[in-house]
Image (cartoon, rainbow, N blue to C red; front, side, top):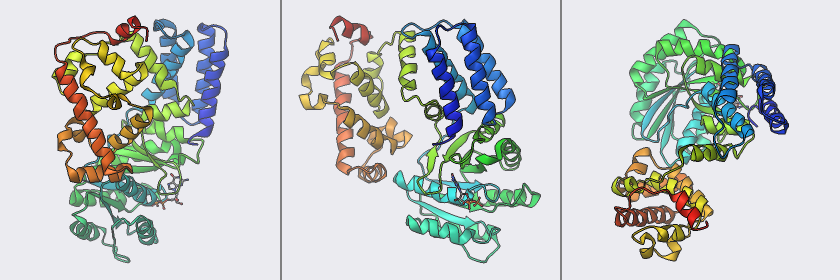
Length: 439
Ligand code: GDP
């Protein structure tokens, strides 16, 4: 597992908290001390750890415990939120056609990551291609070519030619028809001026949409020096931290990134082409804390904080997108049978929908989620964009049948129409209503 040791120390700290008698200043101080120890051992920056400790203590003791949550859950939620604050938001990676330039020192895992990234886009249904402009490290050409060949990813390189700029130009020319072009560039043993100059030249020729800096997790806090140097010369869009599977010190690189105000795009968690994960702070921290249910814990608090109102009016009058639909399905699925819920609503919204369409099983939900993961933001917002070629791409990307994608779109349409028919019902509190009906 990624950062095993940090995870288990944090988990132990929280378990201790759960088992402690009551939550008071002493128990909060104890858990904060344990967390500090765990983070410092994982090489998280001292200043960050101190700031975070202060925040946890203050919030845990001063903030009111949200109703529906016990004091322990309240503290755990604060720890979770503060950890997410440390690592910051992830870099946004969209699924549009784009050019990505990979940057980093030799040995950081740049070449491996280039091929993993190509595979990532390929799995999402896009057509990636790779250019090898690493003319510095002997062996880079063959390494990258064979990694690409394994996954049938188009590759351009010129073995033995040291003219990296020429290679980029010709490669872009040749592979221009592919959706995502990934350029692997050369590294050096250390941050050297000629490396920076080469990156500036490639940057001005390739004009990449994204520049991803690859950092080896094991270098710890030195990561910030590299992030700063590359950011100042060509500007970086995000960072990939590699080898998080094999180090106890990954906290150093994570905090260096946050310190330099960069963000993390992906993490490398192994040597094979599938071992690249899109970086999602909440998921990362949940996993680190070993709490599959932390999300539901947070949701529980937030529900009771806002006495959740389902804004039916805006749903029906405004645009009911695929994203809205997914959110609604998830919420309703948690609350009870959709048909019953809808029939309770004024206007008899449920009447024109068949029994089958109400059967939103959790299996279907997870299938829908996988399919939607392969859609672009625009498609989620405006499903009308999805014609047959996009259906093909989405089905390929999500490993499902085109008919599954069509079924999802059809379901969305039915729901959208139902929403329209239901115009005028206004706001009401669905939870209260369901309670009234004994659900
Ligand atoms: P480059 O010089 O930056 O192109 O580095 P390479 O891509 O050749 O990677 C250097 C070494 O790190 C290789 O042995 C890779 O297999 C290994 N590596 C890269 N990423 C990861 C990772 O996420 N986890 C592990 N365990 N090894 C990795």
